[in-house]
Image (cartoon, rainbow, N blue to C red):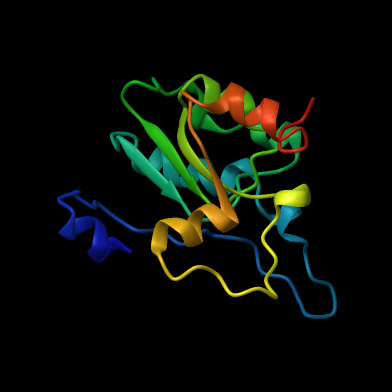
Length: 152
């Protein structure tokens, strides 16, 4: 992905893997528990001057952890998050304020992608079959059309 971004003229400063505490096969830690604010804040704080963070996992799902993220203190006109294939259920407000500039959310309900069916060959059609692109500009419309995508 970094090579594709660089080819598109985007200066990629770094790529980081999430530093999730290890667990044992006998006692695995669920991802929603392992993904704490600290995991993300370590990266946000390491790259304070970044203007774009592309996150290819979900942010913490637990509300108290989500609220502790340091990115909410950043100026959304200077730094934004792009969330690729992450859970957006608790993120309507963060998208509306522009802290999250875009999120590719899996379709849910009757519109959900059926993996048993072949996806369209054309890239945009394949994306549109699986995902909803949510932005600050369309978050209200997405919420109205997809009643189960965001928390009430």
